[in-house]
Image (cartoon, rainbow, N blue to C red; front, side):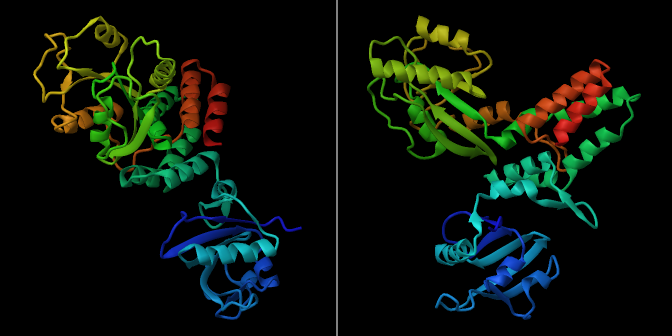
Length: 388
C-alpha cells in the first residue's frame, strides 16, 4: 500500500492558481498515468528543480486533460500547480486518492521539508518549522516581513554563532542571549496575536468601543446593563500589528445566574490577557466599585469613555486616563496608538534575529540561566533544544 501523501497549500476559495504538494515517489504519478510532461519524459526522470508543463489525467477519466505545472523539489517531494478554484483541485485529489495517495494537512508535511544550506538539502530543524508555521499564519505584511527575515537565515545565523562561541567567553554569550531575548515578547506575538481585553462595569460602552476599534459592529450595543453575557472578540491590526480585541461582561455583583457566568468568563479572560483596558463612564461619578477595579488593574490602560457627555466623574479618574467617545470616535485613534505602544514598545530593525515561539524563548531563557550559573552542560542542552 502506498505511503504517499498530498496536501493542499493554498487557502480554500477561488484564486488564479492552486498549489498542492505530494510527499512520495514521483514514479507513482508515472505509473498511474496521472501526469504527462510536454517534453515527454517521465516525471521520475525530470531533474529536481525543473519546472515542467504538461497535462493531468490524459483523458483517463473521460475528461479532457487539465493543464498543470509540476516541479520536483526533492527526491520524494513534488509540487503541483493548477488552475485556481475547487474543481481542478478536487479532480487532482480524487485521482491521487484512487492511486492510493492519502490526503493530509500541510502542517503534517512541513516536518520533513528539506532546507537547502548548500549543495545538498537537510531535514528542517524545529525552529525552522516554527518559522514556516508562523509565516503561513501571518496576517499582515509587517509581521510577515520580520518572519521572512528569520526564514532567510537571520535567526539560524544567530543560533549558529551561539553554538560556536567558546565557553570561556561567557560574557559574550550572555550578551548575545540578551540581544535575542530582548525580542521575546514580540516573538510570542508573531506566533500568536496578543489579546487586549476591554473590561469594566456594565453599560460603560465597552461593546461600542470594541466596535469603534474594529471598525464594524461586532458586538451588540444596548442601554440595558448586562447585555454582554459572554466574551465577544474580533481581530484587527494597528499599524500592521495584529491584535485580538475581546469585549467582556460588565463586572459587578449580580443575582442573575446567566450574567454571573458571563462575569466568570470575563475574569478568566482577564487572567490570560496581554493587556487590559479598563473602560469607565466619565458621565457618572466614580463609586467604590470603580475604584476597586482601578486598584486591581495593575499596568493596564484606563479609558474614560463618553466624552460626548458632560464630565460627572468628580475628578476621581487618574490623570493618565485616555478620554474617548466610542459614539463620536473622539480619541479612538489615540487609544489604538496607546494599545500598540504597550504591546510593541520597540520595533526591530530589518535583519534583527527574533525568537519566534514560546518554546524557543523558554529554551533561550534556560540557556541564559545556565550561563549565569556557569553550567556549560545545561547551556549546551538548552541551546540544542532551542535549535531542535
